[in-house]
Image (tube, rainbow, N blue to C red; front, side, top):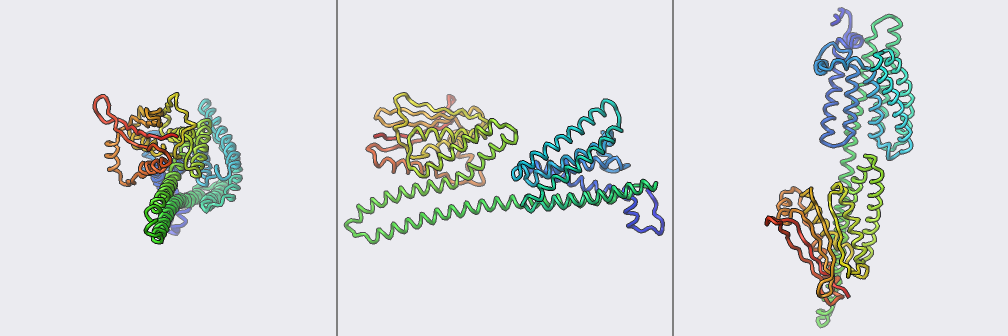
Length: 504
């Protein structure tokens, strides 16, 4: 420990001896806390942004450990003390992590894909350059090569650092200011530190004071970066809350519309004469129930579609992140076809059975992404059934498939099988069976009661109402029955939905 002269001020001591007076230990301690904190946030939030920032601060710590003689951090890494000998390698690593972190933090890949592509390739070249130097060092044992190579890295990374500021300024997000000002603080203090370091070296004096300036830059930059991560999380929460509020408003508008239609019907009933009231009321009631069933269907879709679309796009996004372009393109095509069919079904109240089966096939394929293709789905049509000539209410089968997948098969996780069988009954009607080998309705109800957020399912009842109104123009009636399956051991296993569809 350097003893202070009586006339030496505290600030002079703080500035001239950052290693001995504990300022270095304080800086690395603060960075260590940020490293552990954001590493734990990564496991909580499952966001790689926190992992990148945790790695960035960790390698800053490693780059400065060789300056310490003792302390908690030195003791922590003492079993692998050989790592202290590579400060320039750790500096190269944390600069590269900084670039990747900055691009992900500001979402450069999606907002400025061309800039992202070129800058990423430049970073790959720099990483390859550093890897070659490190491999040569391991074979030759020359630290001089690493040191000279570090100066080359500094030049290349400085040029790249100036270039990547261009997309930073192009981004419209307020998050860019945290990155710009934080990086500028470290850059400014690093330059001043380097100038002091060179000046003291030429004078033959101790170069330790230059580190005080550098450590202040480290602290300022990481304070701004931490605030930026907090701001980003706040924006995500605000966006999520806004989406939920929009959905609630849409459902309320649907309910208001239903109330207005009902009020109009009641007003019309009051004005009718008593003699014609019974017949006219019956006709109006049928029409109203049809319209109400369609309004319920629209309300159900408005509630289901955003959630389904969000999950489907996230699944497709996973293939893109994993660089599995083939699967991403394949499922994106399936997804776009399904969306077109769903939008088309809102305009048409009925469709052919062929079209319905194609839509259901697309729906199950998209849902199967989240099961990693483990769901075995089959459609079996009898030879004497012409599905192109059979009419069916649009999306009638979807709620039953959804229930089978999420309430019957999803908890099972393995050996999941879903089958649609279509045949003609003895009376000439179309017989549709939807069978799954899931956990059964009894077990599904038990699991449903344990959920904190339980929402009543209206899809099945709505399908029954729609089928009833659809069959008013036929002589035969439509039926929907649900049977529980039993395994060979007598345990509940699977569910069978039977739909009787009349034909002309």
